[in-house]
Length: 392
Image 1 (tube, rainbow, N blue to C red):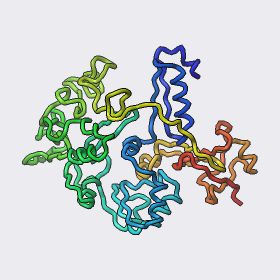
Image 2: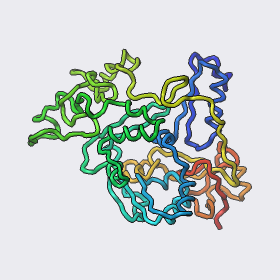
Image 3: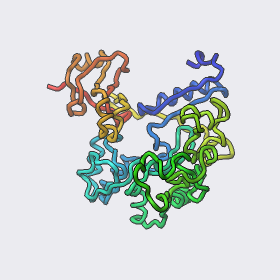
Image 4: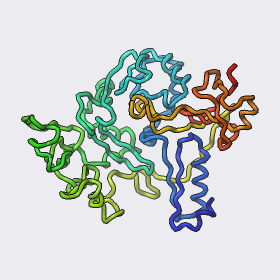
């Protein structure tokens, strides 16, 4: 493959973690190394919060469950989508070992009935925070609409004895406790920066589309988490710094036609620089220094290795709770290589048991599935091995 890419002017190798296997990432790295310094490699983590969570540290869910079973205690779950990301038996062990379960979530998910205390918090669209993307760039995101609820961290802070009450204060505390993440404070201007308008200048208080027939009095709602203002007052368009820029439109052009105004020419870099700040650096600058690490290895096991079949319309419990997405989701699938199926004595359409539990779909034969692997819709326990048998 490196030979095939050698003639490219700017070769780029892209790999992800969707299969939960080390092989694709190591193969991509080997190809990029063979191409030399002119090659670029892009490695994508499983989810938007994966890289930030890894930098926070921790020993993993398996270790946490083992410690909890050895010394039972209360458990706090945030945005409890564990059934989407861990084996069912591991989640069951966690819930059984906990003396009490406090769940902070915005969705009535599968773990809600098992919680001793359920506290509603803001949804992702109503929350401000920071994501770290695949290139190690910390980028701030802001509340998309006001909410009467509060974010989970604001509920937890007093329970943990913390005194932080704003996003800027919690970021400062994060920088102090986690030096690897200290640079996230510079991802965007703080709440005390020059105000930036969320609404365009043409959305006057008496003609805005959502205020027809009623004119509220008094000051607009304040946003304690950012310099963004819930009105047309403040910096507009390119007047705002890139991390707070809400639009680049110009009178006479709608937003899509005026997108190029925010860049140095069509297809050029963002005016004012890309929003966010890099956490990784090779050499002497940056919060984290990149270098050659230990090669990744897949854990051995017996049985069939699970390969997840992804569906963009049912990737999480939040997707499945949305009727417009749920009705577009494909039916569950279970795929095996024909030779593996023959060894099991299973034919097309057979019903199988996975670790003794009925499979969610009948068997389909697909020669593109690697031998020794089981491709399954909704498989979240990546790189896990399972046993298969024909249901009697």
